[in-house]
Amino acid sequence: MASTRTRVAHLLLGLWMSGVLAAMFVVIPQYEGLGNTGRIIIMHVPTAWVSVLAFGVSATFSALYLWRKKPEDDDRALAAAECGFLFTVLATVTGAIFSQVVWGIYWNWDPRQTSIFVLLLIYAGLFALRAALDNPDQKRQLGAVFSLFAFVTVPFLIFIAPRMAESTLHPNCAFLPGSKCDGIELSEGRIGLLGDRKVQLLMLEQQGDQVIAQVIVSEPGLVSEATLAPSFDLTQAAPAAMPEFPGLRYRIKMQDVDLTAGVVRLNIEAPGTEASDLRTRLTLLASTLGFTALFIWMYQIRARLLGVQWQLEQRQGAWQ
Image (cartoon, rainbow, N blue to C red; front, side, top):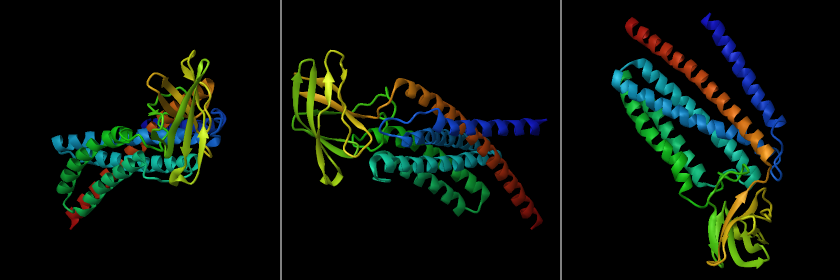
């Protein structure tokens, strides 16, 4: 009976994930200026979320092992860490693909790319430590301690460190319409960074109810530059004209303006509609649920295999 329920659950999971993949190309429309590239977010965000969940599960069972000394807890901790490492790799690869299509480069040691690379190194160190130890009790004990310390770095590397730098290629809040982002503040003559592009505010000019900014945008390496003119509607208190970055699939917008101080807040945005935004969010939610269920399934299988491996090693030791 239990095996029948398990087979049904696996079948439902397969159908669910197939539906998510179909929704990526059928339900979600092409974003203006992004095309099919935007669909990869349905894979990228859930895998990143599941990696954090998996590392959290690993830390929880590591703590339980240190408390109860049950080998089963260590098996679960290791299985979750391995799954988390796999999903982190998937998040890194999908993010690099998105970066290449949108920004023209796979890897630029962006703050978020750098932090996730450091996270991969930390958990690779966990696996290396366990592989270097022959004594099972020592392996489990030190592995559990390492896992706890490793998870302490996860919130900092995933949520805090990438937001501490203003210069980032990562479109944290530019992909979905209506999402929030701080942007950068500039006064006349000042220079800042949006993504990997240098922006300099030349001047502000008020024409009726609109404020128009003249902004020079320079490509990395100063290979080329262009002058853009984003504007802000004072009556609506909202951005008006949002010209595209040269050669990129994002727009620059004037998010706010203070004429008295001569300061504007510039930001980046991927154009879209509220309807497409809703469909994207619902599909993203379905994908997140599907990948979470996939992690649970993979984690359970791997934990059982580790338990069987441990039993076989015990029997071989007894025979010898």
